[in-house]
Image (cartoon, rainbow, N blue to C red; front, side, top):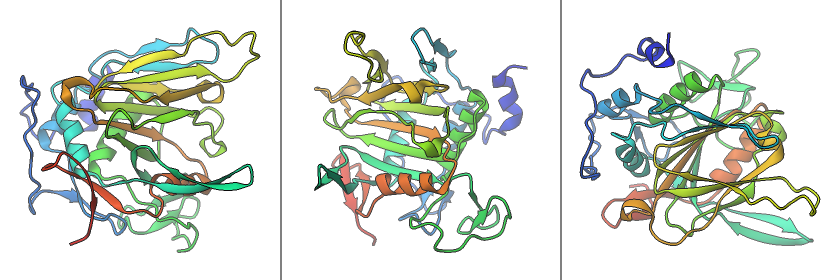
Length: 324
């Protein structure tokens, strides 16, 4: 049985009507009403609506293309879908997530050479999930339970406030789990507002992710280059140019095996507004943290102590959100 066929029993479509392509590539500004189902949690600044029924139905057709293995270089193990999200709904999914999720513009301080430096994260971020040592109670998601005893954990066990994935992301998580044969407990979302928003070379090789982590990375919105290069080798051998993947809207890259231990990746700054005259890009990554240190790390660097930001459709930009 194919994985697409298997998903028919994994998810029950909320409607038999399939999504139709939008020839104009314009998305209606859907307004969330009080009757619309939504995810909520004490740690959410505001409720997050569920995915519209037609988007859920279209996602039952994933992956939209076969994954291409990229493993022709030392220590590299990628699976590249161009795209994973069906073209009929990738733009609307991008607009929905940008409009309905809450984000943060995180600031934090680090010490370099004995001096304290303030870092302003050059993108908007948000995060959901908790590590393997705990889980959210199925009957009350405001309660965290110990993964071993299934009893409530002490209220001060975490310095941060873990929160579950809203339905719009947990639905995509379930699909990702089904097609990557990996499990995940965290979702990080980055919003790159313009070409000046970026992330420098790094690897997701923290010990709390385990020795050979699988990280599924989705791209929605403007096309951006995804660069990879092998970690430093002797200068006489370091002559190769970075590997470049031109990530389009709906694409997904699965990084697995020894990739994080041996390779660095980045989204560099770029000029212009990207495809369709719209410069924004959303990156969604699913990953698995094994211990509490992973939870503390992800919330520190993706939530921090700053204010909440939300998309303002009237001015077409992120604005700081104030309750009431």
